[in-house]
Length: 258
Image (cartoon, rainbow, N blue to C red; front, side):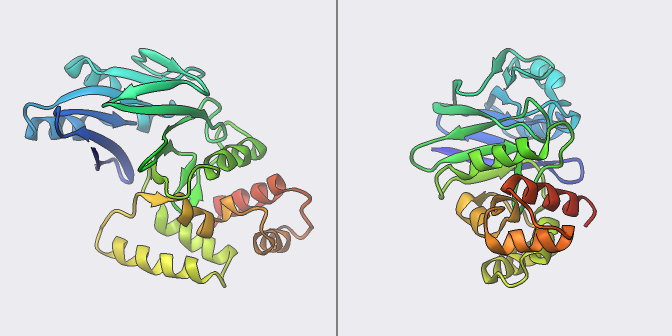
């Protein structure tokens, strides 16, 4: 059984800490800052950092790699299509890797960046480490990819099992759900989720992980084919949309200035 905790970094990043409590080995996902990881290792003597998993090349996800690798000699996995400092194993769509006894598969999910990947654990208690592609209630900005690429990437993630736990890399849930409510104000499930998240954030509590079931029900970026979302996009843009990718593009531009 793998235990997963969040190590906070910067203003709103989460470094996911995966722990094999039997072997006292751990792995981290997207350590943009080495300090929280080193602090955890210092307060947990006897533990070994064995692996570092990277989803994309942005500094707030890779900045801690050199220090961590020098201190622990951890093995670094990352997208083959991006320049990742200290990377030992480049990963492409369809690759698999063994981390802490778990088999993870790799999905290429371009949009936020062109080489962005996600890590998926299938089977019982499925997990998704999706970096800045899918967020709780939202999705990442398009720094390198196109709306069509991001829409396709999100559809790939949405096709995973409903009970998949979604571990994204930022605490953006509250602002994302406020936007989602503006798009879909009559969604009672969304309203209930927003109330829960507002309470959590009022007490500085983490809102993650979510599940894909929650995201399918409340995240407008995964619902571009639904009539209520299309109507909202049509009204916002002032013209009818011909495809789900066009709906997504309007939603993303709307959120960028929300």
